[in-house]
Length: 278
Image (cartoon, rainbow, N blue to C red; front, side, top):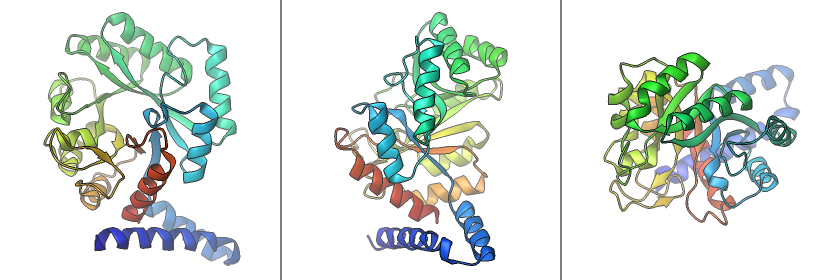
């Protein structure tokens, strides 16, 4: 608990320091902004966190917690959307200060569904899909990765997942494929499946394209989602590993507790994550 308090205090100090920037000299402003940029990895939100919220409510929550990167889910932007609808939804997010940086998670059980996912990503204008293609579709998915030049980040879903419970289950199947075939490392599900997130980051560094950040109560199937920092995951070790591999992707919070009243937990998780990063 003492280390947790330290991280929260550090985060508060960092935020307080940034609030003083307008009162500093020009040189101090540049220096402080540079320090803040170096301190924090990119943060984002996984769209599933907002399954019970409208687009306007999602934008409002993200603005409240100061996060601007979003992995959009199909309940906000359906896969069969017209280009007009896609443009309107993207404009709505952009007007709210939110950047849609990827799409997914998208599940694919047929070649037609793979085709639809890549066409959808192209029309949304992103270069990354968070997806779950079946084993029998991996070669076809790789073909589409080459055709569209859009990366595929396969998501691990924990012990209950028959396809990809842990990150190794993804990596072992794509390690010899095109380098644009990679992982969306869900640290909570990985931990429940017996994999330490910091080890997965190190072991599969070149193939980690995206992260879903959550904490869980225990390293077993029964582990429950909880606010970041309250559970069993070693966040300082995770962040150290990400810095060591020079991770340049997004760390997207996926909050799955109290999903109809998510703002307090998202805010606490974001604050804790920033505290660890700083």
